[in-house]
Image (cartoon, rainbow, N blue to C red):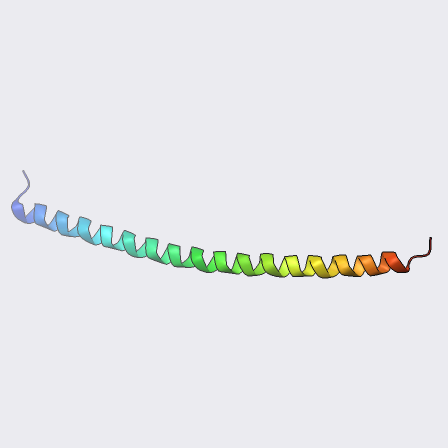
Length: 66
């Protein structure tokens, strides 16, 4: 049979575990937000590079004799 002291210790440990899980989730959330921001930057940069490449290709096609 468990004593009240054992039950109280287990409850405190479970509370500590839950708090640790919330801290880990907050860290994961922050990491994912940073990664999402970085992916958005990369996508914007890629779109800019694609537009520049398209402009270069248009110029080269315009200069090509037919």
